[in-house]
Length: 175
Image 1: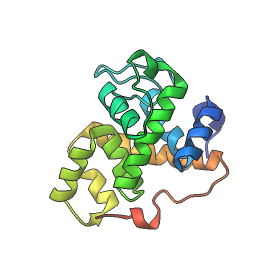
Image 2 (image 1 turned 120 degrees about the vertical axis):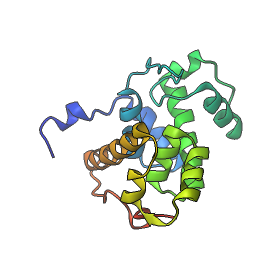
Image 3 (image 1 turned 180 degrees about the vertical axis):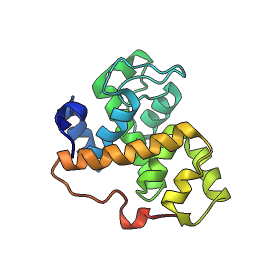
Image 4 (image 1 turned 90 degrees about the vertical axis):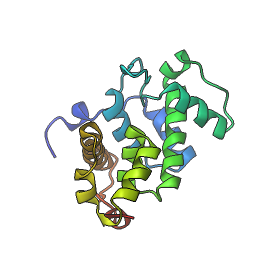
């Protein structure tokens, strides 16, 4: 890989990410890949749409996730707290992983564009190679997002000493 990997792919808040990766049974490198794409690790990041924090959670998503895992209802300002944000972001990702059978392409697309849209896209374009499916995503932002998350996942896995394929065997096709 390229020079200065640690600078280009940092691991800030490592203890928080490791704790919540363990609690949700997610690979820590996937949490880092999502966060790098979402906020570049700026805990005060705020999108024009109102998403907040490291994992860029919308208020409604954060509240629904908190309710589903029996955590206290977060305020908008709570989402700027790294621990709160990663807690809820990891649980939301775990819910998406369960929904999409750990298919990281579908999970990343749903994290970015919403599960309803991904479900519609799957109905409209079922059973095809994943690389083709990615190219048919109607939103350019989501197409780019998914590609970046896959690339960042590969790099972060390497940083954590894991050699993983870009796509696992079960991820090479969409259902």
